[in-house]
Amino acid sequence: MTDLKINLLIIDDDDINIFIIRKIVEKTGFKVNMTSKSNGQLAADYLAEIADEQDLFPHLILIDINMPVLNGWEFLEAYDRLGIAHKVDMYMLSSSVYENDIEKAKTYKTIKGFISKPLSIERLSELLKGIRL
Image (cartoon, rainbow, N blue to C red; front, side):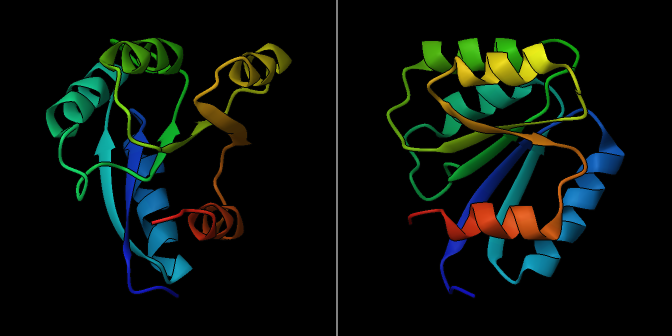
């Protein structure tokens, strides 16, 4: 366990999934500030608003694919347009079982991997351990 706080942003429109992730975060033993946004547009707006605030900017972003307004892919395009220079680990977190979604995730330089739902305590702990503060 570390004393440093990790900023985690969840972009997902499923309240139950967000609740589950919040419970998983608590079980990891890491100190995490978790924020959630229900679609890609809200997330892009939030990141643009805090772009100059290093202490608030996420270290890790988990992105669902299928959401209203801006889906996960559209969020990635909007994020690239923001031109934010912060280093952030981004993963697609989806219930999609389509191979083309997994392959598409590999084409984005900002995406470090594809995680199938549900997120496990072990997988989240592994991601959090990899964060460099």
